[in-house]
Each structure stands twice: as structure tokens, then as C-alpha cells.
Length: 209
Image (cartoon, rainbow, N blue to C red):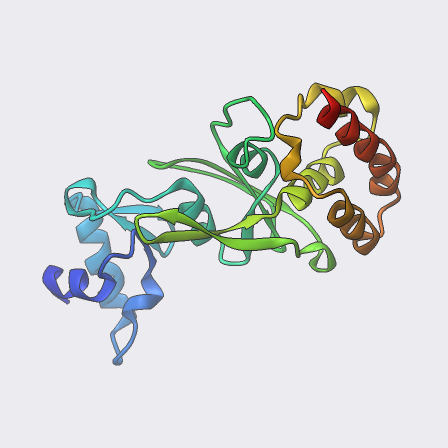
């Protein structure tokens, strides 16, 4: 495959899987060698095995970190502090992107940043949507309520009042208390049931401030 052929195939895709190039009986060994050569010549950036991005000089758009996270693990969505920060629900800057996956937990670092993947069982893998990130990019992102519940569920001791207040939740009008309670019932977690009894009154208090 020639470089111009690759550019035509991937089009405006900021991040792509090598599987995108396997149509038409391509020899996988030859393809792998060619991709390695393009990485060495700095035409491509390898984000992990089988996942690539164009180098900056060939990029039509800069890959959004949330899109990169989705492409690093296909069965995943951005959640926890990353999603809460995106919705403006917490004041802190979140340097890494944290995602939920049904696969194994993993930390990945590449030229686009640090990416954390936390495992959750399949029955809890819900409550996310495709979000438009601009520049023709989109990514799966937890709903605000699910992002908060994922954080509490996966963080030891997060169901106590002190932890919930330390989050310094803001712009809580973006949170739907009824949907949060619905998600708690669906997740069937004693920890979340305890936490919801504290989160909902906390949200009501914050809305009064």
C-alpha cells in the first residue's frame, strides 16, 4: 500500500484501527511492516498495538482525547472525573481520561495523554451516549448521573458524606435526581443505595445555595 492510498482510505479519521485497512485480501504481515515503516518515518503515531493516528503534519483535525480513549478500547465510554469535568460538575482540571470498560483494567500513555480504563461488569455497562466533540468527532460519554455513580461505585469509601462534599459539585442543575435514583435501582448496589440517600439531599442543598 502506498501512503496516498492510506490517506484516501482513512479520510478524516483522526484515529484508526489497522483493521480498517484489511479489506481486499491484504497480506497482514506486509501491512504490519508497512505501518511500522510509517511509524519510524514519523508519518504515523502508534497509540497502542493496532491503533494509529496521523502525525501532526497530516492531521486534518487534532484528535480529541475522548475520541482517542474510545478508540483505544472499543467497548468503553468516558466516565468518572473526566465526564464530570466535561459537564462542569467539578471544578478541578482532570489531566487524564478515565473510561469504563467491560474488558480488563489498563493504564495507557501515548503522545495524546494518559488514559485509564476501569473494569465494570456487563450489567452495569449502560448510561452513556454519543457526544458531538466538534470537528466531525464524537465519543461515547457517560450521562452526568452515571458518571457520578460510576465514581462512587468504583472509589473505596466514596459513599460517605465527607467524600461527597469534597467533590465540590457545582452546576448541579445538570443532574436529574429521578434518573440518578433510577440508575441506582438498576445497578443493584448496596453501596450506591446508601450513597444515593446522601447524594440526593446534597443535590437539593446545593441547588438552594
